[in-house]
Image (cartoon, rainbow, N blue to C red; front, side, top):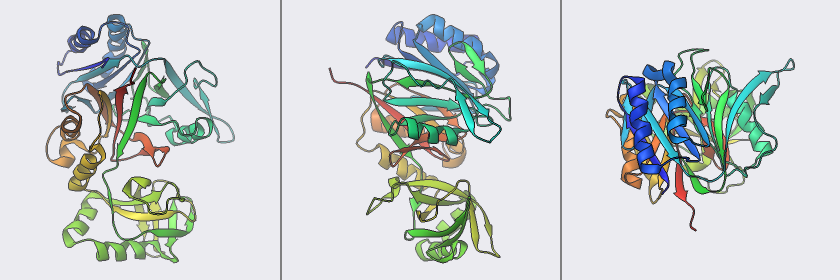
Length: 384
């Protein structure tokens, strides 16, 4: 498979990028079609030089990257230490993107740098965004209209601690706003895998009254009343206690035409507040009137089982991994959890990625901005 990856723990950026670029060059050779590099905050200030070194050493057609809280490699997640993760490969035609978002006076968004016409027939978009300035949800909605069915995979960069702190790499240019990405043509097969780490409980309900992101009634009853009743009826005391520790979640059915939906058909949203006086429940997203919803449980055991199930029977020659920054050792209680789950399922294939401040991936055939998830791009060489 014409892909290679490398990971460095060296605390000096010039030494670290030399290690990963040299290792990938030795295994792959020059002129790959694309390269993706992720660095921890320790190397964020040197990202421009890191990108220049990768370009000079490998001479890829497209290179993108970002600074993140932690980086991912084959069987390894580097948290709270310096790290650089690099992957490069021959994937057929690609198009490097740097996208700016501008807010118009009427509140609408205009995206500069997203091509209306191009030579690449895209099979997937790999997208890295600034969480503070880029309207990821609006951009995904726009893509749904212009490129229906095209999966978008990636994440929001987690390296910045506030506006202006993000570092995104496109070619040799580093920016603190907008988004960067690569349109990948049909030279390889890319299979999206999204593990939201949740287990639905109770039974499905219909949204009967909602305003914006606030749910007032489900199946004609107060939303909070339904939440309490279903939790008590479907969960044990230990599971109810974990709800308090890990948060409240609600899954929304993406495609209402599905007769017997499974867990993978629901996009999970976070319950951000409740109003005991009205019985209302507030989410971090809008849920349209008439939507089918179901409450969800998330904890380390559920997330472990969900990722293992999502990867069961999959095969790949390489993988890109975008893992929520809320996962990792603090969540699972052990290091390298998601990276090692990938290795157990796929073998020691080239892997690179980062811990994201919001993951991007398809659920039910549509791409969403997610939380607490592991979003993976499994890459396979096309049969000749």
